[in-house]
Image (cartoon, one colour):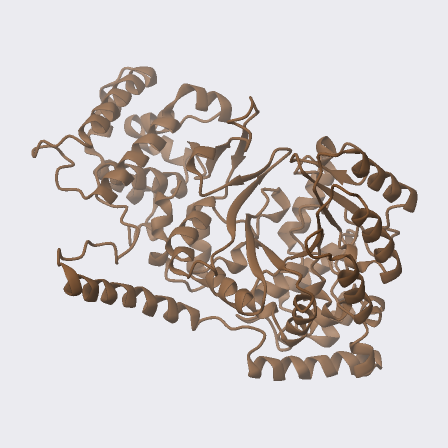
Length: 604
């Protein structure tokens, strides 16, 4: 597969026929697509039967168990994409396209993409065991015994360790002394620009009053690349808000986008494609509530998807707006009266008080720590007074966007309501990249952890943290800083966030080939897909999702099943992923060695 990413469609097609020579003859000999379907299913059934046939003359006799397992999975996916039920659900017919390619190549090539052909090459090579090895370190060790076996195994583990260290050297944290120095210089430039001093910088209210919302201010403080200016200009013209706190701006590289701030900039600077898609959604009158929260909201301000926990949203804004926010449909500009009326907050608390089934409440938004200490003390106190609630989570990103918010007054409130043996206060934050973790963040974490309060991280897995071992490095950094990795979310499938989205196969690959190499206490996060209305589906649980289609443009369609499938009848959910081919091409343009990523084609 080394060079397939650079092949033309015609070259890819020839490779496809070579991968499984009998496929073309099956298609050409059939009088129509349905006859081809019957013969092809019969052919795959013979493959499936032979897979674990112990006779030495079978195709699979010399394959090891890993290759056989991969072949079995490829047969399953191939069968799924050829089923008439799945064709009906997705309005696509790969078998029809393959039939056309076999019988009228010139005309049919116009109907398919390189990504489509690459997917089927991988599947066909996979069923024959000619590809699909997940690692160059997968070979079985020599059959030694005792100490000799242990030494041999140690050599193999050292090879893994060297690989990890090699990749970790590519990344840096915001605790790097050179980075601290550069950011300190930008911080003073920001302070000088606003005529402020160190005391102002340490006051979160000063940051709130000086949130950057215009291109002129941003351009005066840091160099913007042309595409960033284009995106911000389009956002401003069309009233798509952007907000950056002075603290978060100090994490930028002053001289222009670079490796250590690309993920930071991407979170707060809209691209032109993002703006175009938002405007298209608005023009079509499309519902931006991707997660279907209206359908899981029993009263205003509450979301409920699970038996014992609810979400409360008292504040619909943040000090800083994340471009890919799942709640961008309801998040308001911080100056646009985003606060839930107090009487409605009281209604939420009363509703929770009446439902004895609840044991946990997540206070989020928006970012609730934008609220002042007096209001927070009242609200958290009211929730804490509910007898059946034994845990209050606070969902906040202020640890990285505004760490100055973790002041003495807030610490007193957290300490007051965190009662050992009775009620836990837990902080759930959202750190995307190790470069976001700077000394101010570490200081904020220390203050909270000294109270015995746990801090958990929910990372959104995006293009900007998906390079080899990039997220593994974040986990390692989080853990030594006192933050437990909790969830790794598949980036929401909203059209406007396509710049951020990564194929599900890459999350699965990362979890198996990178996360699994870390010590157990570091890899505590769970990769999940948040199914609209239904809630989180664990991506490591293959029973909860399956590939049912590969579209002509190379995108996979997944069917997700509810977490309740063993408890009750529940609806499924169809999700159209981003193309693996397109993701690989993007990595290639960014200078990545895409051989590191090709095995993702075999993660389903």
